[in-house]
Image (cartoon, rainbow, N blue to C red):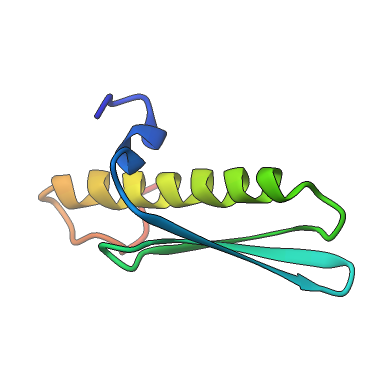
Length: 84
């Protein structure tokens, strides 16, 4: 995985994407099948399905990348915010 490319973390992984239309907006959810990590996005209901899928998987890649970076640091446990 390249240090500057969060999307590389998803290579070779099974990703489940679900899109639900709720009135005027769509809820896109991407889940990594191996870890169960989930990312949810909200988009207009008339947005292209592929755009919602791409947005949800990109957000999932970002979440997983941040968790991996936090786990690599030994100074604090992952998912405990950040030091400003």
